[in-house]
Amino acid sequence: MASDTRMVALGFGTFARADRIFALERITGADRGDGHRTRVWIEGVAEPLIASRTESTILRDMGQEAAIGGPELDEALDLAARLAAAADAGRVDLNDLGRRARRLLASTTASA
Image (cartoon, rainbow, N blue to C red; front, side, top):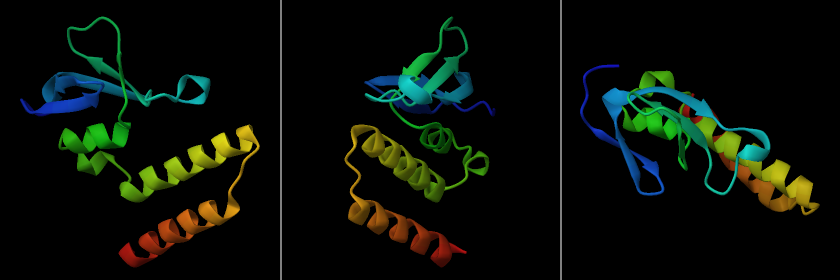
């Protein structure tokens, strides 16, 4: 990463210098939730910090737009996470999910 001294918000009132972040890992499964989205490894810190922001958002704030799939990917992952949580809870709102999916598909078609 370039020698960039901008501060990147990780959530929970935590910030890190962009040039000190060297790895990001998406949190998945049962560990994800309650604001736990990404493990962030920072130079000089022994253990990764838990960020409430997605790795895509952190990369964007770091100026690494080329490494991201775009906002559509974030929306698709959010939609999938909502569907999985709703299915686990036994409360799937197909109208809401259909509306979100149509909006996501429309935004990807419009930008293509």
